[in-house]
Image 1 (cartoon, rainbow, N blue to C red):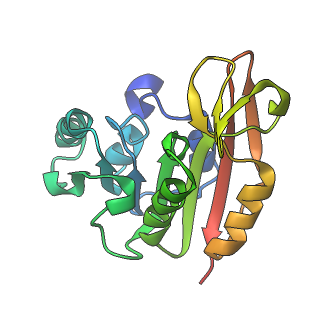
Image 2 (cartoon, one colour):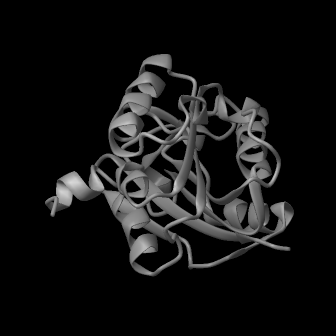
Length: 203
C-alpha cells in the first residue's frame, strides 16, 4: 500500500477535509480549473475519478499528463488542456466537482476575476460541489496595502486580488449557490490570508 505522500500527493489540506467528509467520491467527474502540475489530483487519479484539468502553463499541463498516464492510463491526454480558466472548453455542467485552488487571486482586476469565476462555475453541474481556496483580506484587513481596486500588496510583498466575507456571500447568491461550510480563513503569520469557500450549485 502506498504511503500517505505517495497516495495523496501534496494535496491541499482543506480539500483533503472534503474527501474525508465523503463529498468527493470515487467515480465522480472532477474538473481542476487552474490545475498546475496536478498536486491536488494524485488521489483522485488513483481512485478512478474521471479527472480533467486546465491551466495556462503548458509545462505544468504536460507534467500533469505524464502523472495521469502513470496513475490512470485510460484517461485521454485531451482531458488536460492548456487554456485559461475563463476560456475552458469543457462543456457546460459537465462536472460533479470543480476545484479552484490558489487561482482566482491572480486576477488583474474585477473584470478578470468575474470572468475567471464564471468560466469555472459554468462547467459545474446543478447539485455539484465547488471547492475554492483563494487569498482574502479576512483577518488581515489592516496589514494589506491597496494597489488598485481589489488588488493589494500583502505583508509577504506579493500582490493579489483579495476578496472579503461580504463579497463571497454576495457571489454565492449571485451564482445561484449555497454555502456548504462557513467560510474558513487561515492567517499565515506575517504573510497572507487564505480563505476556503465551498459551495453547492443549486438545481
